[in-house]
Image 1 (cartoon, rainbow, N blue to C red):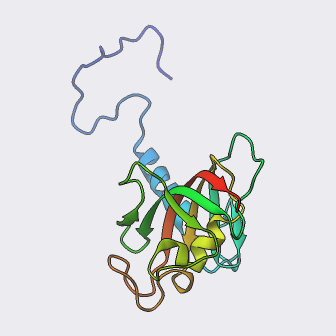
Image 2 (image 1 turned 120 degrees about the vertical axis):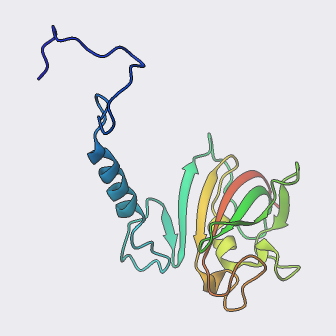
Length: 176
């Protein structure tokens, strides 16, 4: 340990090449990399329980992580409700955004359980499962396996047989 009487370099002083700044260790980079690997290893889209554990609910194959709970929850989304929400959808294989309601200032509105136009987000069985039970003000990350999303055909920026991930924020519920 260094003596408190030893001179210390002034802030902003140049260091020798290869000299590690005080309090920083090359091991921290290795540890951070190991942590990222540990957290992301065996990403589980099957819902079978093997691999990494989910901190959210799982409805068969759909993984739900609640990022922000609603301040109060007097009404939960259920079949037949008119939902007002914002969402952003990403292909898990590329991480690229393929669709978002946030381009519009108004939330996306649809009737939960109804499919009026194939290819729309509300027609994805996994999306329906992922938003069921949400409260107004809640934010979720919903990961949907390919067979409950765009399947073997894929869609636009989503290749065939690729799981998708949605960030969803429920703005309002109209009970019909």
